[in-house]
Length: 50
Image (cartoon, rainbow, N blue to C red):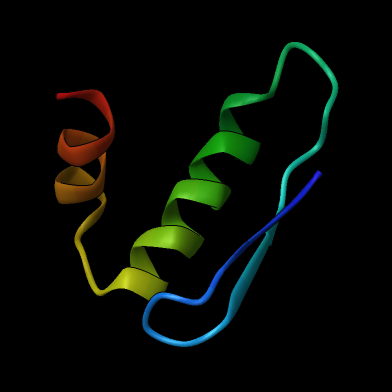
């Protein structure tokens, strides 16, 4: 599955659609998104799960 945002410039993230999603894969996705947004990984997690 490919997700795209145009916030802070165009950015694409590809996420596998199989279950379960491996922890390392999830970590890589979160790291990629946090780098694009300029947020720390902890700040991103707080926004996603608060």
